[in-house]
Image (tube, rainbow, N blue to C red; front, top):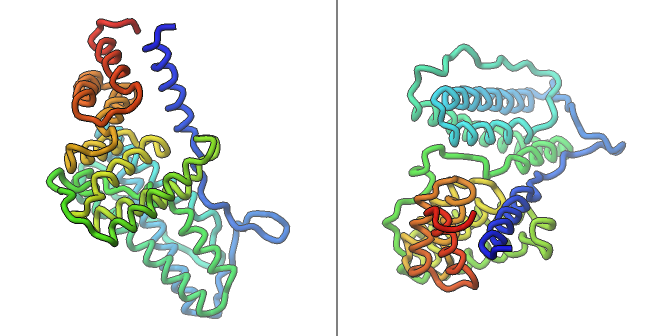
Length: 330
């Protein structure tokens, strides 16, 4: 078999395995009979609990509605990336809480058209609704803990744990990803320690058998820590490597290809001499997933001269450049 073709097939197989992943949230709580808790009664004799539950459920209804409006807006615009993002966040929210409260009634928001609309306003409303729901849920958990209502506390905390932070989007990448001007100039002990924690979780989360034993929760914790490092220590010598590993997690475990290539780009923009093959990895995403051959070929060329050496990367890049230019066998 042609070596280039063999590597192409292998890359496709590995991509498919990666997407399969172990993308599972924490399990729902179950009763002593092994049944998922589907209903929980509000203590109607306690006005504080009643109001706290109403606040949380009202905030959840508003959040769902704002995401539905945003999702419809992106569908009408034909913006598939953001349509999918808002759909993932909506699914994340709806699946996080699997039980319903008995003894309250919540009026569902409705009637606001999705178009014409200002996209930034719709995004701001969705983000504000997210913040309000998280605040209301945490307040509810705190109140229930004070009462000693242990099962209800566990249910609320379980719903929050199931609300995956990787599916909480900013929608505008410029608001989500810092600009290209950052530079890794300062050795900061706190940032170094944070980096080591994040990297350890990332490696542990990969599992001994790759995608078959991926620890999804460790990968998400790692992602959050890498992003925290960049946000809190933007001059740290570890920001470029953190960006690289954020891209790796988005690519290998989240199927977030657009975000992955933007984070790879930040990695080499922040440190042109980064010790990981950021350009090559971005090239493979543009090549096999985003189907943008011109960008892929350009980054393959740059990876040959500017990336650190990795076994077979340069030979693979040269073969793919030929294929993409229509000069090699497909």
